[in-house]
Image (cartoon, rainbow, N blue to C red; front, side, top):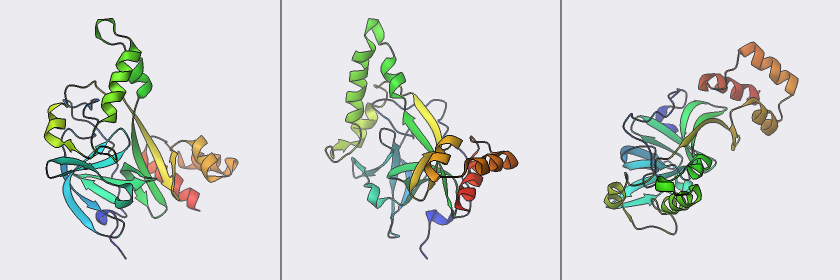
Length: 226
C-alpha cells in the first residue's frame, strides 16, 4: 500500500492559513508564503521530489524553484505536498491546504482572491477602479509559470513583490468527497450528495455541527459516507 500524504492519513492538521503580521500577498507576489519554502512533493505514482515550493493564489496551483526559474507543477503530478509544516492535497485539480482527513474524505481550505473587492477599489489621485482593475489583472496574468510563460526568473519576481497591490482574500472551507469539491455549508452539501433533508437536519442537531470547525465538518463527511 503506497504511502499517503506523508504518514498523516489518520491525523488532523486543523490550523487554517494565518499570514505573518508583516506579510500580505500582492498582485506581483500572489503567493500563500512570503518566500518559497522547503518541502516535499508526493506524486500519484509514489515518487517524491524535494524543492522550494509555494502555492499561487491566482489558480491554487503549486509553484517550485528549478535552478533560477519559477515553474508550475502540472496537477497530474501532484498527489500531496508538504510545505514547511503545512500539508496540501490535490482536490479537483486545486492545491488546497488539508485541515482534516478520514478514509471517507477531507476538509480543505480554499483561499480565493476577492476580485470584486480588488476591482472596486479606487486608485490614487482619482484613478478609477476600472483602470486599477486592468492593471491588477494584467500583472496577475504574468505571475509565476504557466503553459504560456515558462521563463519567470525567481529573483526578478521576488524583487518586484512589494510593487503590486495588496490582494484581498476570501477564506472558505470545503469538503472533498468522491472527487467532488463542495463548499462546507449545509445547503451545498445537501445538493451535491443527495442527503435526505430531514435526516441531515436531525444529524446536525444531534451532533451540534459547526460549519467553521474542521473537526465538526469531518463528522459531516463521515455521515455522508454512511
